[in-house]
Length: 227
Ligand code: B12
Image (cartoon, rainbow, N blue to C red):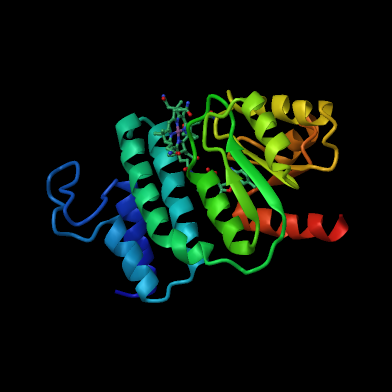
């Protein structure tokens, strides 16, 4: 199997929620065929670029979203793909986190209140750790009060907020206002997640919008240079 074929199979396995070779799949025909976990291990063994693997994860979840939107997928289907993503991330995580041996600052990250999407946030957490940031991850569905409490204890240089729903992105504004009201003017706030944008970041007073994790790493470098 070529590297491209391997990545295509990986994308397909995530989309159809095929976890591993023991999983028989939704139609009972997939037992014995390579699932997400075996394919990620194989990709790593064959030296496929980590970023290409992460891109494949993103493309797979994008497809799952489209299938959900068009009514072909239901919640359990999205959950099966999310489970595959979680397992795949657990496999690749140690390699991505293998520290840069530098201290680039403290980063507090959370998915805002009401939002249960944490795949993107977890990728950002893992990659930033690997890039040398000290990351405190508060998880998902985190109320603004909790974020503020931890800001006071952890004293981060950066706060990262994630939201995947149009209904929860408004929570971000609440957090930004709280941070500013408490006088933490030195903390840079980064936001990300599908419904957010540059314009939205500006509107709510966040410092930076990040399209994806690479964008985040580049923009953080810039913020560190100018501060
Ligand atoms: C997986 C998934 C789920 C899973 C989540 C599991 C989990 N543990 O995360 C489950 C099944 C639980 C779920 C539930 C729901 N979901 Co959902 N879900 C998705 C799906 C398919 C993929 C999201 C994902 O993981 N993407 C892959 C990651 C890698 O990308 P990402 O999150 O965007 O993150 C990258 C960047 O955005 C950025 N980033 C993200 N956050 C941050 C933060 C910072 C600080 C930085 C710097 C960068 C950054 O970097 C990341 C890595 O590069 C999306 C479709 C989509 N296209 O997004 C729908 C989607 C987000 N869900 C949707 C919906 C409607 C729901 C439900 C309401 C469904 C329902 N009827 O119950 C519920 C809501 C639950 C809740 N309260 O949150 C809609 C949202 C529509 C909208 N506009 O609001 C989408 C868009 C699907 C669709 N097309 O309709 N979902």
